[in-house]
Every structure is written in C-alpha cells, then in structure tokens.
Length: 420
Image 1: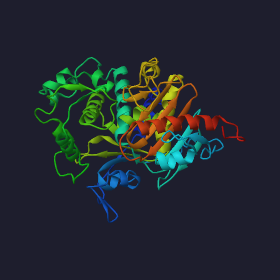
Image 2: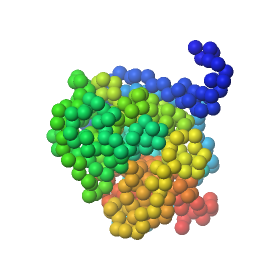
Image 3: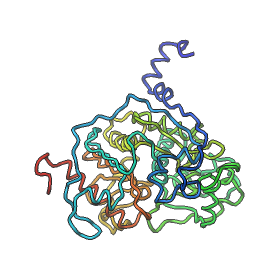
Image 4: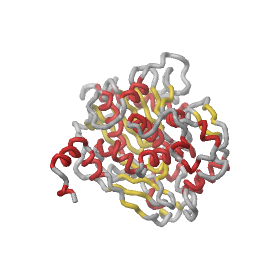
C-alpha cells in the first residue's frame, strides 16, 4: 500500500511527476453502444461528412472505447473574451470583403474555435451542437501526436531511430517489407505503403469502423502474411488521411513502452497539460486502441498546442525533446510551396506542417479543417473543430491560413476600432 512506502521514495515520486501521472491516467473500458443514433444514422454512415457534427461527439455509441474521467479541477485561465466575429477580412475564395464569422461558419464550417495566448483563453465559440465539455474524435489529426510520442520514446531510449520496426514487433518478423522500415522513417511520415482501396476497406472492417466487431481485431489483420511486403512510396503531395501505417505506429509505441496507447498518451502528454474534460480512445473488438480513435474536448486539444509552446521555452514539465520542436520550426527558405493554399516554404515534418511566411509557425492539420495552429514567437494557439466537406484541398488550406492570420490581427487590436 502507498502508506508503506519509505518517505524518501515517496518524495522522489512526487518530485519526478510519476506519482501525479500514475494517479490520473486511469481509463475505464466502455462497451460499445447501440451503434445507432436516431432513425437515420447507423454504423454504415456514421462517419459520413454530413453526419460528423453529431457522430464525432458520440464515438462510444458506435465503437467500444476507453474513457478517462475529467479531473474537474484543471480549468484553463480565461482573460476577458475578445469577440472576433465582426473582424473584416478578405475571403480567399472570391476575393470579397467579409466578416470573420462568415468565413468560420459558411466557408470553414467551424463547429468550435478556441484561442490561447500565453496559456489564457482569449476567444472561444461553439456552433452546431458542439459543447465545450464533450470529447470529439480527432480521427487522422491524431497521427502527428503519435509521431510526437514516438520522438519522446526515442529520446527516452524506448525506441532506437535507426532500428527496424520489426525489432519491437516480433509478431511481424516474417514481414520482409518491414525489415526496411526504420523507426525514423515511420515517424517522419513522409512515405507510405501503397495501399489499394480494397485493402483500406478491409483495414476499416478489421478495426470495426464500418461494421459490427466480431473478428479477431486489428492486430490480426496487420499481422497477416504478406501484409507489409510492398514498397514504400514517397508522397509527392502532402500526406493527409489515415492509413494502416498509423496503426502500425500505434502498436509499436504500445509495445516499446510496455503500456496501452491511451495510458502512454496520458502519462507523457495529457496529464502534464492538465485536461479539463473526459478523454476517450476508441478500440477494436479486442480492446486495442485505434490510431485514429482519440477524442478530446476542444480546450484539451488546444492545451496540447500550449504544451509545445512551453516546451520550446523550457517551462514545460513534459518530456518533449528540444530537437523535435526545433525541427518543426526550422526555416525552410522560400522555395515553391508543396502545399497549394499555404505560404511558400510550408512543408510537412513529423506529420505537422511547418508554415512558410512568418517564422516559427506550425500547424497540425486534420480532416475537414480540424486543426491546431501554433505561433511560438507570439505564444499563440488557435484550435478548430470543423467539418468542411471534402479533403484538405488548396481552398481549405487557404481558408485556414487566412483565418489564422485574421484571428492573430483581431486579438492584437485594442477593444475600440477593431476593423482594420
């Protein structure tokens, strides 16, 4: 029992933060719900873009999950709210002058917005049924966070960047394709296996995303003979969207750290950001967390950006390695952008996007406009939950870039005379 620990050891645990992390990172398994929401939404269409405003807040209805209860005593500091809706900005889609609210609501389909400056909330707005306390699925926006966990694992000696993935996944030792995939290549996220549409459908089925879960789970599918015996393909365009490679990384992280993915994420990042609301992580039928299954409230999503800001300033209690932050922000010059819609010099690094233009700006960009923008110099964090139809087209990226800049200008203005 805890009270039998020697006093010196107890103080050591408290000082190192291990005690706090272990006491808060408790996840309870939640059985799958009815897999139906109302008369028209079921397992076959719950991830359709027209349904996501409802369903991304109801992941446990459709899939089994692990849930961490809210701490209840870690609310973010809030300054006097700074409204941004009436701020005038040029619409990048038609060149007309409109207020920022129009771009948020009618162009980006932003369901939630929160802005942190120096760790304090300066703007917060919710629409279309999104509530502040409800965890919303990040889907493919989780992958950069897994890459961050991988970088932390390398720095802590749990992973060796130059070693092959199969060193940590002996069940896949027979996969010749994985012998050429190093941990570094997996984390850089610049190459992917050339998955066919049929294989991607089978991957979703194995994970239980699109059908009732009655099989042996995702790892059985990942371990099938010949699954990884294909060449890696370097992406000529930015990599967006989830793939089986994400679940391969999730499995590697869990095995190398000898703990479930949800607990690893909590102990390394979330507990240090002091979450306010419940956290969920969807799982397959075997209780294994899915790489795209993380659900956070918008405030807790924004706090992860603040954690990165503090890590660069040396004030964070997290174990984020300095080299990782400096890789994200390092200048790439003014060569032609690989991201149509973003400033020249923008490029992908460990799944994040180093933004061209003004220095030291980084973004995590998920599907449909969901994103996390970080300006390290201004200690500014902007988080969106959005459901813009379609993929991350140049139009969507241009909207994000314009809105980020407009919000930055809007909150910097004095209260009077806010229009530029």
